[in-house]
Every structure is written in structure tokens, then in C-alpha cells.
Image (cartoon, rainbow over all chains, first blue to last red; front, side, top):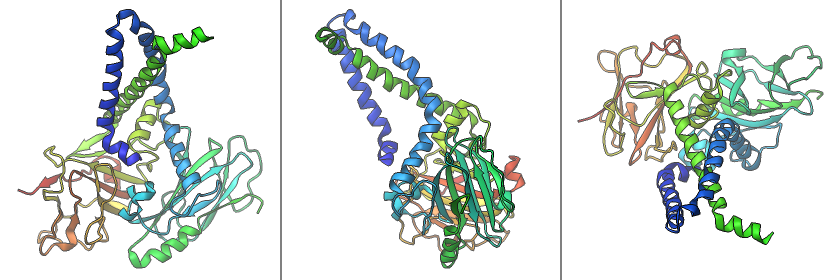
Length: 218
Length: 200
């Protein structure tokens, strides 16, 4: 669907505008007074709507990813909220049906999930990556901004447990955990684990599967 | 009540709302495209938007990024460049052959990996006979005598340089180059990708 819109967006727009022109022309042919209400309504909706679309665009985009994750999944069925799913293969044209994945890199395994922190913090566990490149991107859906990363660049490649807490959480961080404060109770998670070559795929996948989320008190 | 319904259907208020909403949507797209262009840096035909994905952007930049590069990595995590044109501004097409010439030591500096991927105009990978969907730092690229490297972006294999070959999709296509953990020269903007050059 997205692909069709991307490909045929321009002709579709032209057709819609032609239909509008037809409607307005028909009314105009019956006299100016017949278009006044239409024009006033259109201008009001346009003036309010354009800023509204811009304001909501980041949120709408990230919620598209939420729908993709929670409703359709990334090839293995819907991914329940507060769990992570590791895609077992690198991106390839065979994944075109799955949409999201056919636009990715073929040197990475992707991990995806949606977190809700309203009922308390979650623990993000990452395994010992032994120097392998990986990252876990944490995105605030209201701004579509990456507020934190876990991974080689920010935390290294040793195993670790990160306490991800929502705004206003007042508990104490258990010993051995690093706290990451999220500005939002909802968080989009995109993990990436490097795959050296085809023979490295199973090792990379085993590590990607060990990037996991658990409730705090487990 | 019946009068109200008759007015609603006859006055054009519903049509006006629909038309206004569509124009609002198109206006938003035009504005976001313009903002997107203003924050895009383009060198040798390659475009990147280093500001996307960072916290602290204003609403226009956030929205423009969400449209151009949704939920993209922060630039210091991964630098992405895209181009749909060769160095002279012509649309990339599968019926032409292209090269990218990296001077000796001129591959994208990084602390993780880099790779170059062709996609169709909408950004999706397209199947090819040798199932190769990227070339990069693990491709065992063949060097020229002076240490420089040429990538061959074309539909047929280049004799003697098969390792440097990236098969292209038919029709218009796009290229995306990713450098994960980009080096200092990428982050400070002094590193430039070489242009895509059409083979005569």
C-alpha cells in the first residue's frame, strides 16, 4: 500500500484535484453564490488542517511503526507490547511483502518492539556481544527523537541490564542496573545486530534473540 | 432537522471540508519537503540530513525528518547518504552503467562498517541474478594499481572486477550508502562521497 502511494502519489493527486475542479466548476456554472459556503469551509479547514498535519506528522509516523509491530509484526506474527522480536534474516527483496524490512540494510539483523512503561519500569537486557557492532535505538513517539541508545557507541559490548523508567517514576534502581529515563511512557525500540557474512548469521541471530525485555521484579 | 440536512447536502459545506482537508494535507507535504530540503546537505549528488533523529529539534524539523527519514538513526550512530541522480544531475537508470571512484584511502571512515545498497525509486530492494544487494567493507573489493577503488553499478558483470559489481534494478533507481559509527571526518563534514559517474 505504502509502496503504491509512493509510486503513484503524483497521478493520484492530479486525479483528485481534477475531481475537485469539476465540483467547483459545476457549482460556479450555477452562479457565484453557490460556491461561497464551499469556499469558506475549505479555507477554514485548510488553515486549521495544514499546521495540524505538520504538528502530528512525527506522531503519526511512529504510530505507523507501532501498528506494524503490534498488529502485523516483522514476519513472525504480532509482537506483543513490552516484548522484543528478532528478525531471523537480513533484509532482502523476498521481504517486500513485509514492507518495512525490504527497506533495511542487509548487513544487520533487526530487533523491534513497542514498550509501555505506564505499569512500571522494564529491564532491557543485552548479552555479551564480544566486540560485535550492535545498537538498541530508543525512540520517543511524540517527537520521533532518539532519546537514548544502548550499544557499542554508548555502553560498550559487555552484557548489561538497563532499567527503562517512564516519566515520574520514583522507585530505587537495583544494584547492577543502569537507569535510562524515558521522556514518554511509550517507547519504540529498534535493535540492530551486525552480521559479518552468511556463515555468521546464526551467531548474530542467537545474540539478537537475547536482547530482551522483562518487568523489573522478575 | 430536515432543513439542516438539506442545507448540508446542498450548500457544499461537506465538499468544502473535503477539499480543505486535502489542500491542508498537500500544503503540509509541500512545507515539509521544503524544510527537508533546507536541512539536507548535498555534496556530489549525495544527500544526508545529519539533524534527523536528534532530540531537541523544533517541530518543523521533526516533522520534515519524520517524512524524509522516519525513525532514522542519530547521525553519530549511522550516517546515511542517498542519491537518485548521478554527479551531473541525471536520474539514475538501470539501462545505463555507473562507476564510483574512491581515491586510495578514500572509503567512508567508520568504526563499524559501511555498505552501498541500490533500491527501486520507492526505496525497496529488487531481486537480481547473483543475489547481491550491497557492496561494502566486507566485499573484498579489487583495488586499482594506485590503491584507488572503482565500484561498478550496472546490470552486467564487469570483467575482472566482479567483486566491485553492484547489480542495478531496471528503471529508475536510488542508491543508499550507510556508514555505521561514522568517523570524525564524516561527523565534522569534511569527508565527501565521490560522485556517481555515468559510463559513456
